[in-house]
Amino acid sequence: AQKITQTQPGMFVQEKEAVTLDCTYDTSDPSYGLFWYKQPSSGEMIFLIYQGSYDQQNATEGRYSLNFQKARKSANLVISASQLGDSAMYFCAMRENNNNDMRFGAGTRLTVKP
Amino acid sequence: KAGVTQTPRYLIKTRGQQVTLSCSPISGHRSVSWYQQTPGQGLQFLFEYFSETQRNKGNFPGRFSGRQFSNSRSEMNVSTLELGDSALYLCASSWEVRPAGQFFGPGTRLTVL
Image (cartoon, rainbow over all chains, first blue to last red; front, side, top):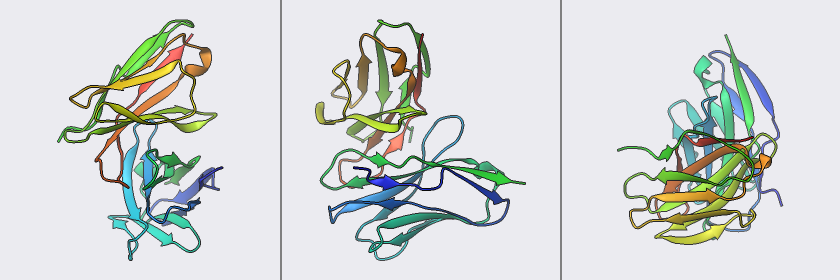
């Protein structure tokens, strides 16, 4: 069963505007971690932000913030003040405490327009 | 602190050959995972090693194998290569405490002709 769903194959945003990338997940494990990665055309996966299932506050890392809605099982990534260098594939991922592997969504290709 | 390194970065092989890819994790990380990324299937988990033992394995045929050494460096091997094995192979390392984030290497792009 698909555990991570990213419903937006592609997104466009104007430079300097904010954008939200959607992610929903499915798990019965009460302890899990949610992650967002950026993959530019070079191929390397770059870790952006982490949210633990027991964290009370939404995670933030610079221009990245995670809108964590546990009851809805969603973990949307918000990028503020978009820059041209933000153009890349973005992957949402989950790692359950009882599972050793990381499950990834299909990804969203973000294009920042000047 | 140095990141995850993978060698080689690019590889071209022909059908039927075998290939070995190498991954050196971040210093202090004992967990190493391997993923295959293709345009059609996305990112798929291959296997994870921890302290020289395979802890988990994805749904791949037995042609895909791996191992981990005492210094946490890991290798994966693909025997009898098929055209469909052409992909970006990513290695990631992490702390042993779960759930924990994984830090990825730059990947090895394998092309099978």
